[in-house]
Amino acid sequence: MSDSSLRGRSLRGRSLQGSRAFLGLVKRDLVLAFRTPGQTLNPVAFYLMVASLFPLGIAPEKELLSQLAGGIVWIGALLAVLLSLDSLFRSDQEDGSLDQLLLSPHPLPLLVLAKMSAHWLTTGVALIVMAPLLALMLHLPTQAFPALMLSLLLGTPLMSLAGGIGAALTVRVQRGGILLTLLSLPLYIPVLIFGTGAVQSAVEGMPYSGHLLWIAALLMLGLCLAPLAIAASLRIVAD
Image 1 (cartoon, one colour):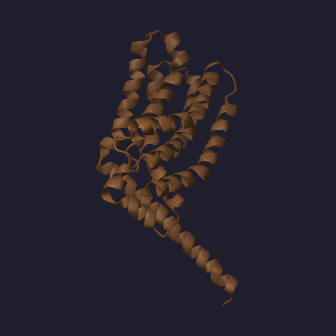
Image 2 (cartoon, rainbow, N blue to C red; image 1 turned 180 degrees about the vertical axis):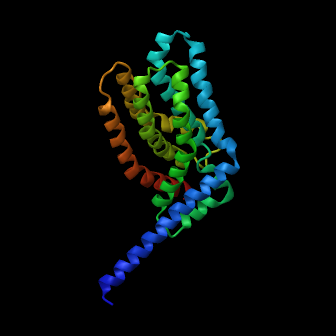
Image 3 (tube, rainbow, N blue to C red; image 1 turned 90 degrees about the vertical axis):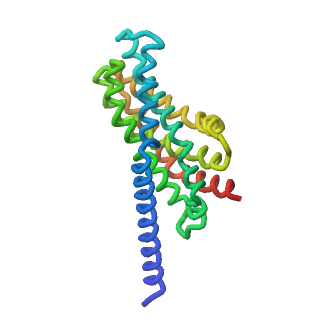
């Protein structure tokens, strides 16, 4: 057998093992999330409360709420994701799983991407599912629903990836919630601007595809760079 054939088999074998490690870690985090539903339900409940309190704090007028609905839903999603990030690596830190991840023979950015995927599946998807209910409560015009759903579909995984950097840097800081918020909020500003911009453009009957393309481009950038940044942050904190 030639050397090139052996190298090809070795690469395919490593790729297969990496895929199994990725799926195994996603499955493990999903199982843990279902065993402790409070960690998943608390951000969703917070999301509903934030969006429900806004009409009481400003004015319950239909015309005003329909103009503000997109921003309210997006701010509620941002705060809910922030609330869920504190436990992203902390439970792994407490039970020693984080050290196992750092010592794993598989690429750490791949394992980090698996954890961020599980976080989005347990938090971001729930926020997207609840968004139409909040939009109805806030009298968002129906023509803006597709823009809201598509912007959240692209924006919530980006928020998980960006917030993961702050969560990794503060994983060994006692009561690091405020520091995590200060680190993550600046990274959320672009996605918040383009997300609310897409919804507002749809409300006014204008094209919103440009805003969605910007969020998609930022998501691709986040998928390429955030796992590397999170992995580097975890190694720095571990040292």
